[in-house]
Length: 334
Image (cartoon, rainbow, N blue to C red; front, side, top):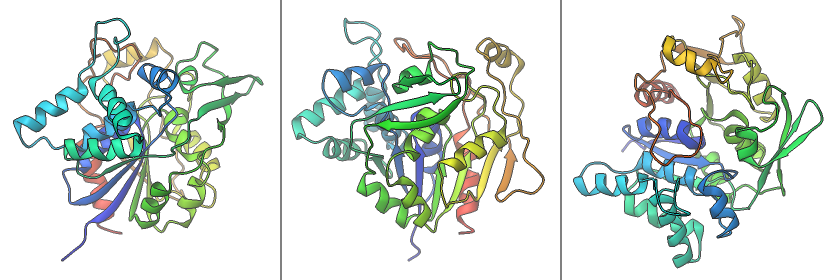
């Protein structure tokens, strides 16, 4: 019997959600590795009030991989997605996050709580925190300043046009051993899309991640973001993303880079221009060490802000089915 190929997706947030939502429809063993650096919204309460690792990226990945074949499974998924828009101390939080917090307290283990929630949702795959250590992201900037905390890097109160020169964690964190094992056994590794520093690089700066990737025999795909983002990637071109990414990928080269070539609707561009964001320009040279796949990766659905959501979100997303189809074509070659 032919064994399913093993895919590891490294990221977090809505970017990883989009990728996983498409991949789960194919015969593959999927492991989602998600960042544990989130510090905004409900994550702040989970960290400060309950002393736990943030749950939002875990919840999103669980939902992306969740079974939706029955009315009961759909209802459970909707429960996990439900975001409170009223109630003192609850506005902005989701039922899924509260469920994971409660389950962790009952089981006295966040890892076991994630495993049990995976069973409840009957997910197709596995979701792993990149580290089990409690950390803060620290960004150093070109003007010599430092900012502590993922939320303050992602949604800056400082001048977001100033470039980040270094990202690291405080304290240093160790790679979750299960993540290292999944990477060593994988056939394909997908990095991105997502907040470049606060989601993607946030995973790569965990001690042990670089070594695990360098030892892996898997092919690596990097999925380029759709738009630049003030605070992290102001005025970045496609090649700038890769140049910086390579600084955090020692001794390991990318094999493929996906980049969107579908036009962004003019009305959406105008809204992005108000926050100094623009489509990422494909300025790759004709010859690169990796294969560039430029294609229509854009979802036709516009993102609607949820009631009670207090954070800024992207207006457009990658199309999960288009991305998954391309990834599976590549894994067939592995």
